[in-house]
Image 1 (spheres, rainbow, N blue to C red):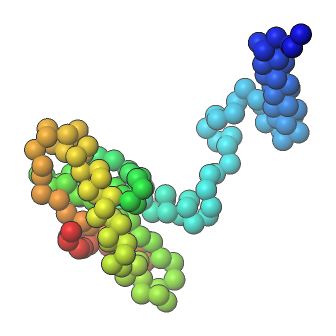
Image 2 (image 1 turned 120 degrees about the vertical axis):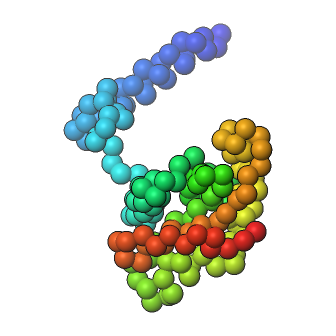
Length: 163
């Protein structure tokens, strides 16, 4: 007679819990505190962390200039929108770029035609949802902006390109 599947699952859960406790003891963390602030190592590569920090700095800069951030890091198959925002009656799709080394043309120059095409496709994907959630179903005028960091200071390029 085969083993009871519920008993087999229970044993597997117990073994997994034991492994987690052992791993926590070896690494010096408490298993009950996984996910507590400050306990987890930073996620992503150094470049990804740098990008997230640049996006946060850009959002602070835009808020200081009266722009309302609606969404961050909108991802779909077509691409990613770093920031979706509202400035008055305009819907802004904002690309944030940072370059430490200006040898290849700087941050703003990195938003080439191919990148613009990906941004436009992603914006078309998210436009209906953003209009429904933040504009009451009335399609607003849209604008593509770039916030470029070549140094620590943001350079906000309004209407950087058009769809």
